[in-house]
Image 1: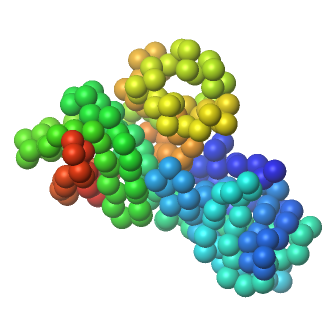
Image 2: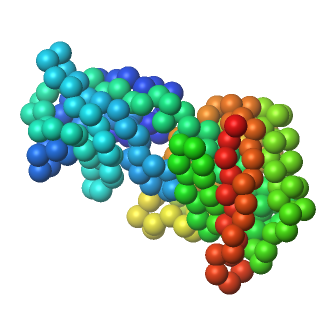
Amino acid sequence: MTEARYLDDATCLTFEATVEAVRGTDRVVLDQTYFYPAGGGQPNDTGSLSTADAEWAVTDVVKRDQIEHVVDDEAPEPGTTVTGRIDADRRRAHMRYHTAQHLLSAVLLTEFDAETTGNQLYADHAHLDCAYDRFDDDDLQTIESRLNELVASDQSVRWYTLDRDEAEATLDPERTRLHLLPDSIREVRIVEIGDEDDPFDRTACAGTHVASTGEIGTVVLTGRTTQGSSHERIDFVLE
């Protein structure tokens, strides 16, 4: 089973691993990886795997029963030791946007009682869907101002794991959104933003994040659209 090391350290961009298996001709399974597989609205990392004699571009990373690294040529043989290198700019952008999405979800819930129902982020923009009738221009200005206050206050971001039963018994289900996780997940990763005793946001998440909100940069809301009955989509970019 591949060790998902990106859950422990999202800042590690170069690592060594051993090829455990090859699926088809171009899908590499490693014993450990810092490459993030697409999931939870966050795209996959890209980068490369290399040995002293060869290099393969990693064009996609997918998680099925194992984490598979899709390469651009015939994969290295099982047992090969490879060096993985992650595209730093792409990873950094995803970390900033994912953390910003957490702030946006928390602001919407706190200020408008609007629960997040979905999100998708990219390297240069993102959107979030929530349960709400319709935001007006004043609402969007309020949301944007609150987000940038939280960025400017440089709140700490941290994460830890909890047993699923303990998390459900001790944490606020509305904020953590544990009900969205499959029942098969028995250990959950909790991400918190803000004061340790009274965090502004606390939610279950397996994505990558920056260490403090000050690293996000200025948040600009670029618009809203209606997504069916009583649902809104908010688009945003980071400067």
